[in-house]
Every structure is written in structure tokens, then in C-alpha cells.
Image (cartoon, rainbow over all chains, first blue to last red):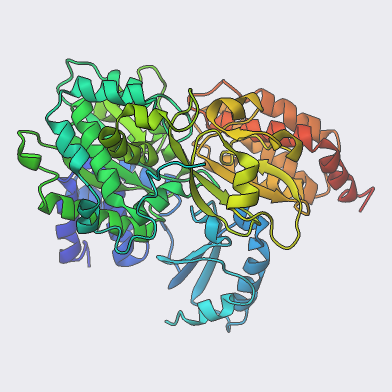
Length: 154
Length: 421
């Protein structure tokens, strides 16, 4: 395939005319691509320039500036664990250790999870908090984290 | 203390996010009332109410609106819903309770400043809230509250929802504008202020979600009713987010001027597990930490907290327990600001990096007790020298922690050094 899937092309096209300038569509378009392909590949950036006229430089600078864009192949389930002030006070590091153990329990190359510490997720009343892909989990602790992760199967 | 709930009045109301529920409780009546009025009248009323920006800076909202040049042909209204200040979760709560309250506030604000196009900019991690907001916008369009000839008038206001991609700096109003323009979220030098030259160089007003959501109530009940709550200089109510090891963490709507200790020890139920209070961060990660003795009689308003050497900020009250090592909080803070520095200005880019490196030295056993003074000195030179306030936001809490907890931090360094450990 040397361009985006047809249904995605349609969505990209409508984003390009949705805002005052096509450039404003870069963030939303990158979200669309990421939702579709899991990560943003170098070819995607090239296709956006060739097929949709979005400058490769402009797209690349956005893709690399914002931390929620994935520019490398990723696991099926991405755990983003808040390790900022409140979650840290409420024991985030210990829960993350437990998650590291969980990840380590899979045979080499078979673990469907990745773990990343992230800044405040804006749910400090439910600290410690984490996202697994787009699902929010609150009051995650050493006792419930294994069951939460077990609910994610490839 | 009796006061009407403004922003949280949909608490405990079933199906509170639905348009029908909002309308049943008087929703969109304020917009209806305002659209027949002249924009200047609306601005005058909001000015008179004393409403101040709830994103952190506390700038008078009506005054901000009045800065839009009268001759402007294209004006934009942007809602800053990029809630990212650590410890803050109030705007999320507004979207959870009543996204229509925000939409109505935006219709009123757009009319007041002459904007035909408005955007809500939301952080992308709020997946559920984004969906709820989108549903509410769709409902509002279908019901004729948005779009052409809204509410049977000749007015045309469009509202769109724009989603960020994980950058704290986009919560800074000019960083948000850069992001909406499809660029890196780098703040822009002021002046010109956004009200004169903002999104795509056009006059733009950026208001926080909580600010805009308070507007319909003010229109309906009048400036005097709003001013009757809070203090003279900080009128009205505010959402306070209490978090940390307390029994009932959560969002509390209280009049400004409310006692901080009452909020923590009564409303939020006090500390869990017999923990003792060590310190409080009263207004988000960038607010300097306060000691128990400093909050004894402290009230939650812009002036009182400033006088105590900290800031009300976003209203994020983070409670720190006695067994919390301050070095760990300092490490989290400086790493956070280092990671989130956009890199434009040297004092911020390099300064936050130096702070982070020095604190990293504690773990690597290379730090020396005198590094605490060095952290303070670096922070001192990071203030007031950059395009936006992120550098100051990193410097202020660093100064406070290194000053107020110098002995503890030095002991940590000693215990962790080759000498002590």
C-alpha cells in the first residue's frame, strides 16, 4: 500500500477544510492516523505531503513535539501511569513496580504491555491513576492492578 | 456558610449532561436573555461581577473581553480546557457534570466579544470527557443554540472542539494558540496580547473552562448576587481540587475567601491513616509550598494566598503528609518542568535542566549539601526572564521547597552520599 486506506483518506480530507487553515488540521490528522495504524510511520508523513499538501517539516515538528504521538511500533496495550506529585504520594512507584513484574512474567517477546510514566492525568482524586490505551483506571494499587491488566487480552 | 452552588449545581442530578436536563433547570435562558443585549452591556455586567480568570492568573474576565478592538472584523473565542497543572481536575469535573454550561458560557462570551467562531481546546487524555463534550456540541447545534441564526436571532456562532496531544505548555494561552495553528505549542511574546493579535493574527480571547462556565449564572442572577459571595477583590465561588492522602479527595465548590484548613480537615475529611500534615501546595504544581503554621488562618482567595507567599493558581490543593520525603517531590517537580519546557528560552530550557541534573545527583550520590543553595540560586535567576511563565512556574516551588525544607534536603543528600550512606 503506498497511501492511506480509502476511509482514512476521506477523514483526513474533511479535517483539512474543517479549520481556518489546513495547517491547523495537523494535530487532528495525526490523531486519526495514529488511531488507525497504532503509530505514525515515516511513510505517513511523506504521504501527507504528497497527497494532501501538508509540509513534511510542519508535520514532523508537531509529531515530535507532542508526547502523545507514537513514532515507533508499539505494544497492543500501552500503560501510561501518572507518576506526578499526587499519584507519587499515593504510591504510584510501588504499583509501577508491580506492573514491571507483571510485564516481566511474560515469555520473551510475548508481553502485550508497555509501561510509561507520564505527567498528571487530571484525575488526582482517583490517585494513583493510569490509562491503558484510552481506558482510565483510578485508585490502582498493588492488590487490584494484576486483575486490571488480566482483563486486557490480545 | 450558605451559598448557592453555581458550577456544581448539577451534582446529584441524574443524566446531568443531557441537554434536556440542562434546559429543565433553566439552561440556555441566560444566552437567550443576552443575545438581545448589546455586547457592551454584557461586558459591563461581567466586569461588574468581578469574575476573574480561573485558569490560574486571576485576570478580570470582563476587562479581558473589553480589550478586543471595536473595529475587528474577525474575532475568536478559545476555551482553555487543556487542564494539565498537576493536582488540577476541576475542568474535567465541569465536563463530567454539565458540558452545556460551558457551551452556554461560550455563546454569551462569543456574543460579548463579537466572535463568530469559538474553539474548546481539550487535552487528549480526557477521552471520556471529549466524547461527552462532542455529544453536547452536537445536541446544541441540533437544538439551534449554535450555528446560523442561533435562537432565532441574526447571530452566527460556530463552536468546534480541538484536541491536544500531550503538552503542558499548551495550557499557556499563547502556547494554546500556537497549537491550534497546527504548530509546536510554543508561547508567543506579549505584547501584542491575544486580544489584539491571537489565533492566526486575529483578536482572540482565551478563557479557562471554569471561567466561562460561571458566566451563565452571572447573567441570570446578576453581578450583585455573584459579588455577594467571596471577598471584595476575589468575588464568587471557585472549584477547589483537594488531593493527596485525605479521606475525601475531590472537587469542592466554595466561595473565595474560604478557610483552607476547613477545606482540608472538614470538607475533605482530614488525613487518612492517622497521617499528620507536613505541608500544602495550595494552587497547583507551580504554587510555592506552605507549612502548617502558614495555613493556620489562611483563606482561599487570590490576595490572601499571595500575601502568604504562594498563589491560588488553579485551586489545586495538594496535601502533603508527614512521611513524604520532600526530595522526592522536588525531583518530580523539576523533572516535570524540565520535560515540559518548550525549549524556546535559554533560562527555562537550561535552567530546568540544571535543576533536574542537580536533583538527579542525589540518586547518583554525587550531590553535596551545598547543592540545595545552588538550586535556590538557579531558580532565582530563572524568574521573569522568559517569554512565558513556565520558567517562573518551575522556579517558584523550587525556591520554596529548598528554603523551607533545606535541613531535610541536606540530610537526605548526606544520608544518600558516600559519607552517610
